[in-house]
Length: 123
Image (cartoon, rainbow, N blue to C red; front, top):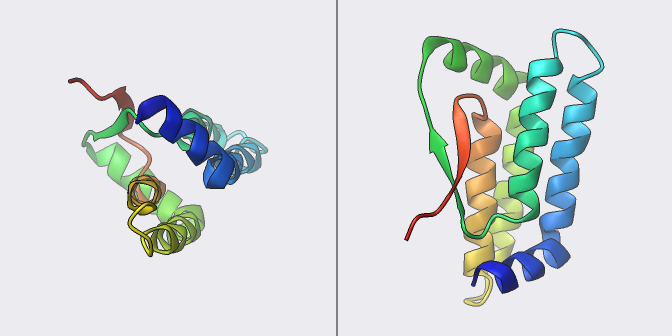
């Protein structure tokens, strides 16, 4: 499902999801303080372009928590909401459920991107 899923994903929503992360990264990189936020956005744009075969591994730490709170209050909540709503639309059909699950994965990531890493799924 990896390659074909990623191709279909890119055509039917992945492009826009990835571009949202890139635009967010550009917005954050306008200031010196926002550069770490922007770099994080660019890292997860690649996940948004092709999420099948990848998973998000969440770490922990007080600094990640603080930065995630700032991120969520300023920017992450609306990206999570949009991805969640698109995921719900995809889940209306049985065929769309795998794509909806990928949007839910990205919505969770939009709420707390710091301390998270993208890893290939091991089989």
